[in-house]
Image (cartoon, rainbow, N blue to C red; front, top):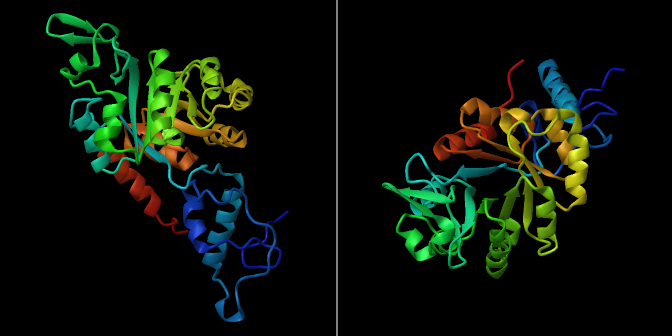
Length: 307
């Protein structure tokens, strides 16, 4: 059965601004399906041209089958801060990333010997020929290596950003929730782990904290995505974080059906970023904050392709 063109009786009338985003595979977060039949919006003096009708029809068709991001703008996570310009996971790197426009920061959490949550990728630091274990070193001494505490991050950079933290030491999770709760930023703290059962225990501590299942690259069999999404939703988790190559439009759409957010990591190249945005993902992770933000802004400003 042929679909009616927009602007004709029985069609769906959408704002022309919507068509621009539909063609490129994303849309505002205030609609996910084409509205029901409404009265034609064209008057007799504004009869659409054949090209306009074709564009409208194409946008309408694509909007009904294309996954839609659950956020109006995907979160742009700076992976370990602006690590190509400053030492990774340091206050200067985090500050530089925010200055470049990143809407989110990413890091890893361990616990120092004096019980402080510290942000560093590995649990062992190398200082010349010495190996310094994070768990056996105080936060004050770790600071000498440029390793900040979570508290220091918020003190130095504020809290007006999304923060994604890989839980490297399970004991850090409850401490992070306490810090975020005291600052009123629980809803902007995304705690990531490959252990969904462990994350589910954190939901018992906080109803506002964001919990992200991050199973690693290639560790989810495509045939099990629906079962996985159902399980994550039942456990009270908020998002699934996969390597960008593991996502497809269909998988993004499936995840969104369970009211979960979709995050794509290792989106280092422009083509990776554009592909992720076009799939409708809700967040991306990139080492190059400048490249990520430029690509995001260009993607947001694109017009529809001429027919």
